[in-house]
Image: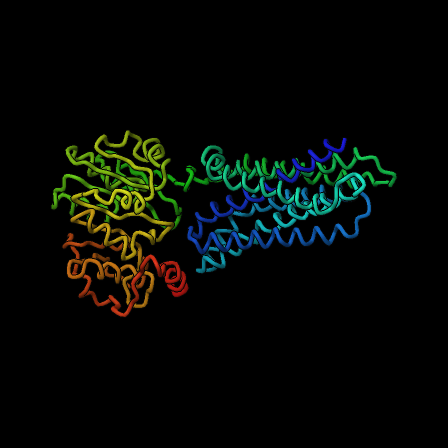
Amino acid sequence: MQKKVLGICLVIALLEGFAGLGIEIYAIRISATYIGSSISITGVILAMVLIAIAIGYWYGGRLSQDIKTPRQALLKAGYVLSLSAICHAIACIIQLPLLAVMTSSTDSPILAAIGVGLLFGVGLAFGSTAIPLITQFLTLKYPNSDGVDAGKNAGMMVAITTVGSVLGSTLTPIILLPYIGLMSSLALFIAALAMSAWLCTKLAMQIHSDESTSSSAPTLNYMLALSAFVMTAGFILLNKTDTGYQTATGAWFINQTVIDHQLAVTITDKPGLSTSSCWIYLPKKNCHWYGKVTVEAINEIAPETLVFLGGAGMGTPSEVAYHNPTMALTVIDIDKGLPKIIEAHFLKAPIAPNIEFIGDDARGYLTRNSDARFDFMLIDAFQGRFVAGNLYTLEALTQFKANSQYIMANVIGMPNSEHGYTQTILKNWVEVFGDSAYILTQNDSSNLQNLILCNFACPGSQLLVRAEFLNNNQHVHTDDVPRLDRYLYRSIERL
C-alpha cells in the first residue's frame, strides 16, 4: 500500500512540474508574437516564473504547519492544484486581449514581459504550493518508525517535480508546440494540473482516517478541476484564435491579400506590426520595396552564387531563383520547419530547385564553413521587428566580408543620430566597410523603417559616412560588449 501511495504522489509531482515549465515555455512563445523575443524578455519572464514557484513553495510550507492529518494535507494539495488549473484557464481566455492591451499601452517590452509573468505566475504559484503539502502528507502518513523521514520526502518530491520540469521544458518546444500548436499545448498542461488535483483528492478519500471530513471539500476540488478543463476546451473550440503555423523555433502568420489588382500573400512572425515577406503569385515577384531594391542590385551585379542569411517567406530569393535558374542560391535560416510552411501556405508551389535551404544558425554555419565563398550576400534575419544582433557585431561582419564580395543588409531602424539601436548597427557597418559603406533610407527620420545597408553603391543609396544622421561618437558592438539589447530598449522608450 505504501509503495502505491508513494507512486501516486510521485506522479502528481511529475505532472505539476511538467505543466509548470511547459506553461513557462508557452508564455515565452505566445508573448513573442506581441513583444518580441530576446534574452532580456526571456530572462524577465523566467525570473517571474521562478519567483512565482518560490512563493508557492514558501506558502505551501506555511500551510503545512497547520495541518495535522494526512487527509487534510492531500485535500489541501488537491485544492491548490485545482486553483492552479483554474487560474491558467482564466489566463488562457484573457491572454491575447491582455497582451494586445499591454503592447498598446506601454512601449517597454520589459514591463510587458513582467505582465506576462504575472498573468501565468499566479497559477504557477498555486501549483508549486502542492509540493510541500504532499511532502507533509507523506511525513504524517509514514513517520520515522517506518524508515521514511521529512528530509527524504522533501528531497524525493523536489527531485521528481524537477524531472517533470525537465520534460516540460524539452518536450514543449520540440514536440508539443510544433505538432499540436499553442492552444492545444496549453490545454494539455491545464489537463495535467486538473488530473493531478483529481489524483490528490481521490487518494485523500481512500486514505483511512478517523477524522470526519466534510463532503464539500472533495466535491469542490473535483468541480474546480473539471471546470478548468471545460473552460479551456470550450474557449479553444468556440474562439478561432490564430496562433500561426508553429515550428520548433517560431510561429508564422499567413495573410492573403490583393496588391495592384493581383492576388498576393504576406508572411510575418509579428502580425499587425510588420511583414517578413510579400509575394505576388502571377508574376512570381516579391512586393516589398526593399526586396525590389535587392533584386535590382542582384541583376546589376549578376552573381553566380548567392547566400541569404534569414529566410522568412523567401520572397526575394524565390524571385531571383525563379527568374534566374542558372544562379545557385543558399538560404540559411535557424527555423528548420520553414520550407514546409513556405511551400504549402506562402508560395503554394515547390521552392525553386536552384535554392538550397540550410536549417541552421546563419553565423554558426558560416563560422564552421569559413572557407565558403559567395558572389553576393543578403543579411535579412530578424527577431520580431529587430535584427538578429549576433549578425551585426564587428566580428560577424568581418567574417562575412571574407565570405562574400557584395553584401547587403535589411534592417529596421530610425535614421537619426539619437536612436542608439540604429546607430550601433550603422557604426559597425562603417567600422568594417569604411568608405564602401552605403545606406538607403526612405528620408523619414522620425519613424522606424526598413533601412538597406550595402558595402557597394547599391541602387539609390548614399555614402554612409556622409549621412547627416550618422553619430560618429556611437560605440561599436562586439561579441564581448553586446549592446544591441540595451540600445533597443533605450530607443523604444523614446518612440
